[in-house]
Image (cartoon, rainbow, N blue to C red; front, side):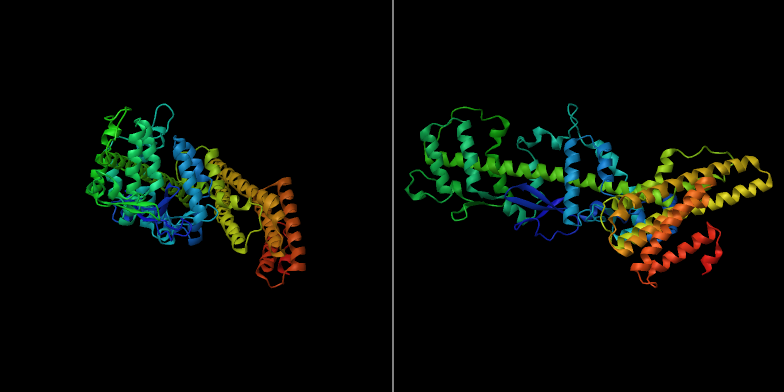
Length: 546
């Protein structure tokens, strides 16, 4: 269970939040700090499935650091997308979206070992990413709790809202253990703040109470005099019948207009015990009287108990709701990262190669399998579509992301083409046809990947480029991906791809000659890629050698 460990006295913007801490807004005057203990997400000491863990470690070890970093990226729209499908309560969905936006803006490490970047990119900490056992525990031990947690939330059959976001939740309940449960989860600092009662807020509760029970004018004035004595505006020695013992444990600060209530649990329990009939129906709406000042004091204490109980109830309700929100966001993030890792760890083309070992031919991949490739580069598509000038680091990350995916797919295409040719030479027609189907499937993957990149370049990246280096980088990238299409295309398709590649490379070269040093890495890389194009696509080795 989360705990309340501190109070944001100068505003949550200035508070130094630590790992797994988030602000808990109570009201306009009070914001607390909510903390999730380490044992909630212990990544060590779990009993794991040995065979599954071994397989996971092997897959983890096959990925390079760059590939692993790319696999551990989830864009800001993926979590809300999963949220709308899995969570029926509209209150829960809005709360998760609010918390996620809050973490994007603040950058607080509230979900550790998950991290939230300034652009809403979800990932994991470096120490967790490189530790295969911790990553496995995160994905397949903690990650398996998502559906069970959502299913366990009681929901209204009428509107599908959960109990924590039901309209009835905000009404004070009959006294029970809930105030004590919340009280036990507070640090001393939080308790001291809770029992610091603003006198004007107490007066509002008192006036509501007086109207509800239809006090006559004389009795009402008597109760208000008892209230003014409590806040230090009247001299108690002049009041006949005043009982000082009734106000023991209460201390007023007239200048600050605060009332300090004794923070001992027994005192709080006794004070709240006064208001039990108010919430259990013992005091109905009937005329009440306070003919003497000591009875008026009793009524003031009852109102103080009502105000304190309502505050404790509100804190407990918000604590439970925010804990549920945090858990939903955390488990949704883990589930999205797990799916991203699995897609990166086993692309569709590799699955097709593995199926070649089967004696029975398999049907072609479904469209959802083919779409897996595009989902792997979704974070970079989102970045590319922002229509802004990318930094050198972002450009390189974009290039590496796409090349990581298309490199494996191009290698798969080469292997399948070679196997298809060998089977044709052997006369194995059935197996050659089966391999041909997988080759076509990989070609479809290649077209999808290249189409995504070229679309991003033409619509967003090149128009947004303002520097010579950016323009050369993007035009060279455009030439590369047209070249990749030309590698497996035939006939007019190959001719068109080659022409488009040549035009892009020449545009990059013209800009590079004017604006970039001949020894700059981008210029040298362009020269290398253009040489490969001349040699392999145009079959002109001489320009490549020069």
